[in-house]
Image: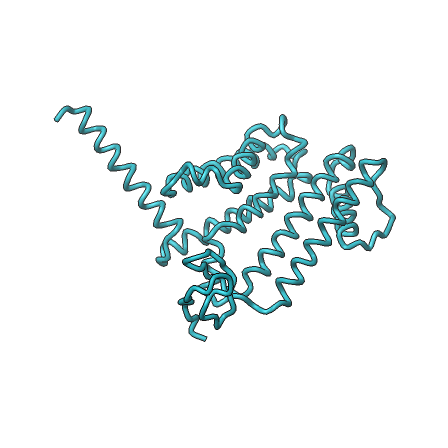
Length: 267
């Protein structure tokens, strides 16, 4: 066998081992995998905290260092998830991957995408769709709270997206913490429809922003209330029709009548 062929086989073998290792870390249920997933979630939360604090930090000398450090972490996580996936093309077609790629672009080119930087908070929504986060919920018997947690995260993501939008396009002339708090104050007052009136957005664009914020905000609050107060459901995909939500004691799928074998939580 030629030396080039041997080198190629060794490289393929090393890549295969790397992908297997990453797959076990990202999708496994061993103690080592759970520790890795927990660290990944903590790092994600730190990056999200940086995104929220960006309006306050963007004038600091160290901002670019923090920005590029976050870019390196997001790029490493995206690359590792691609390698850990059994179908890279399918993973890249998912909305969460599009969000991560967009966030990476805004981090690598902060000046060019300055007006879209507020969308980085969508990383919180992307994190809420990762399986590793909810495995820890299931381990601690918190599965019934998964849907309510999703609703809370969706509401928080919306609040910070609108806050960033309002700050970028209406308050940015006076950058800093006070103006960002003003944008957050306006967003919360509008979403809750209390409308104190001491902070309003000027012009037709401001009125349209308030209208859209109220409509979407109310629907998210309703969704949160439904998730908290309606009877808990079990998430278990029906093998025949794919319906995921069932009563905890369901024996047959209410959509197609297929016999179910829902795992007992031991309660």
